[in-house]
Length: 170
Image 1: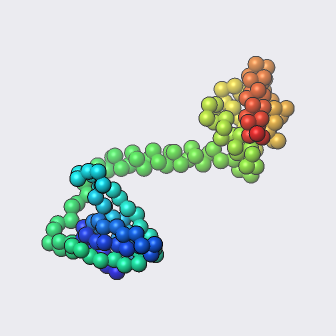
Image 2: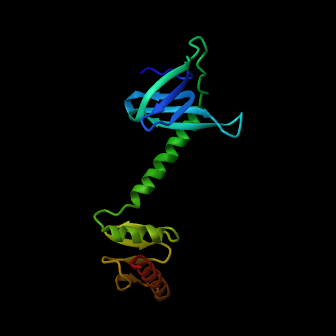
Image 3: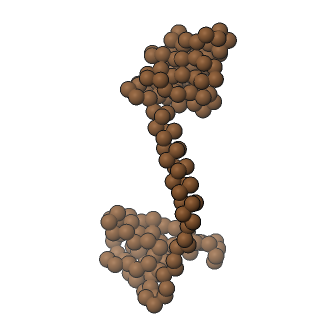
């Protein structure tokens, strides 16, 4: 089945439903057909239907694509913009990778993820280190396993960890 982009088709699904629209994408390798279908309440807007070709029973081409119509070119992107996006993406991936503890339990990772929402934390081996309060949470990650030099910071972190663990056990 060769469905040209911009052709108008009627697709009948195996469950009996039908869709009529313009082919936006036909990807046989992934069994994907994307149609732009008219929006039921607007003559300007269109809806997008993503259909699994494995669920299609029948396809009819109602209006073939105009082969002489030029294919619109994608706008060129300045190289510096592309390189900046790449750099930002790599930096974000590195940061995300640093937030994954090596050889820690799922519960420890969950505690770390929760703490990182409001505190500046990092992994040091299997210990969680909070940088501003200068405290360390050692395995098994209970309030009793939190160490630090500032008594106020220590009490605060113990309270936070106890609250997180109480919420998770509910």
